[in-house]
Image (cartoon, rainbow, N blue to C red):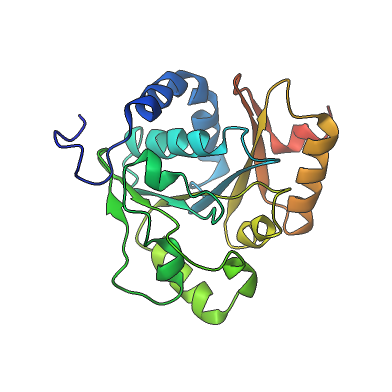
Length: 225
C-alpha cells in the first residue's frame, strides 16, 4: 500500500509504479533462478548494468529489488551507483543531494531511506566523484561491507558498461552482476564487448535480462548463442 503523503520520501512516481507492476510477471523467471535452493543463498550484492545507457537497467533494478523484498523475507536495499544520472532520486521522489557517495566517503549522517514498500530501502547516489569506486581504498571497502551487512540483498543500479570504466570497478565490489540488453536494439557485437569488459574484471556475471521481453538467459549459456 503506497504511503498516503507523496511528500514522504521513497514514494514512486505514478509512471514508475505502472512500469514496476507491469514487469513483475515478466521478471518471475529471473526471480525463480535467483531463489533456486540448489544454487545456495542469494548473492548479498547484485549489480544491474547495461551495455549502453537507455536500455532499461534502472527500471529492471527497481523491479528486481521490489520482487526480492516482496517474495521473500529478505530486507533489501536499492542503491544508485550511477554518478552521471542517478535516476533513483527522481523516481522515488527523494532529495538526491546526499546518498551513497557521501556515505562511502565517511559521512555517517547519510543512511538509506525507507521506500513505500515493506522491507525495501532506497539510497540515491548523492554527490561525489565519478571515479570514487576506482579509488578502491580500504576505507571505501570497509564502508561498503558495513552497508552490505545491514541487508540480506543490496541491488545496485550501476552505470552502463560502455559509458565508463567505473562500472568494472563496481563489478569487483559485488557478488553478482546482471547485464540488461534492449531486445532487438542492442547489437550482438555491443553486448559481447560489454560482457568481455565485465568478465575481465571478474567472472561473476550471472545472466542477461532481455529488456522489453525480459527472457532470462543463464550466464553459462549466453556465450553459446
